[in-house]
Length: 99
Image (cartoon, rainbow, N blue to C red; front, top):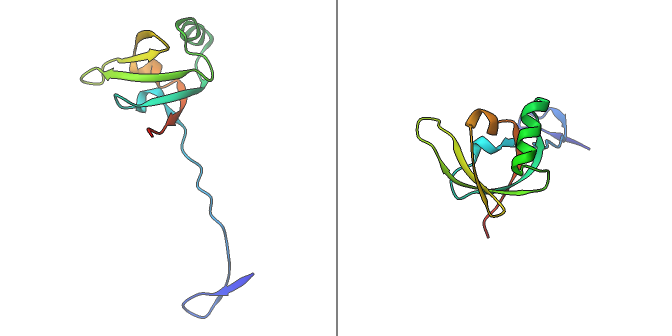
């Protein structure tokens, strides 16, 4: 279908879809929750994160953020874990909106 623009020229209708930018655990603020979608890290770091409870589909809650770009305190299930912000950037998440 074609439509005329404000200058009378024919232009095609185009749908524009914006895909959400992937978020990382490091981008969450205190009090926010998310679900882990992926871990994009080398095998050593990935193994360590999995051993700490960072598994795909797991819910994670940010308790607090350290000052001056310090570590994050996150809660996975009933366990609190402190993780370096640079390591948290390797954990891809999907935010859970508060009701």
